[in-house]
Image (cartoon, rainbow, N blue to C red; front, side, top):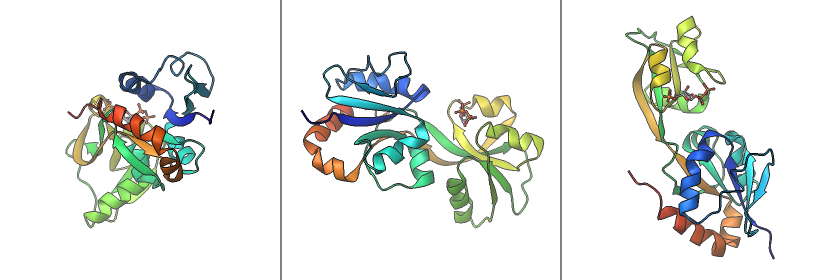
Length: 209
Ligand code: PRP
């Protein structure tokens, strides 16, 4: 038998939201969700193998063909640009990329922006003709305007609770974000007979709302 179709998936929160969609599409998620530290998990029928990765690493494994398919956030794909197919928006992990800051903040001509998404932020402000100073922070981005590190932030907002609890307000939405199915370009063609029906089954259960 040929090697299993390999799918790179993000560990953690997002995997739990993906599981019902996988199940609906006929993918056995019992092994995938089992509570152990294994980083490669195969379905009992040996047809699928999952690689459990940090979300930001998923596109790298798929681009280089170590995985045939993967699940990645649009934020990561926009920020780092990969040579991949993006055959399906899975409609899970929905959130938005926003510009936020302290309520009523007067922003200087060259604002300093703290973000994990430097490319997205730089391009957004450039499009508006604003030459922002964009600095990288790896997390807890909402803290930075509170202590004078930045004027504004560019970050993901899901429920809005983190902004609210830190007295920040949304100023602009840059784009909507969700999880996408991604595919290695060569494997997408070579294993089309296995990949196409899988995409079809997932597509028929994607929540379009
Ligand atoms: C993400 C994001 C926001 C928060 C938004 O952070 O960067 O901080 O979730 O969610 P909310 O609108 O529902 O409050 P995450 O929890 O991934 O941690 P991080 O700060 O380390 O990035």
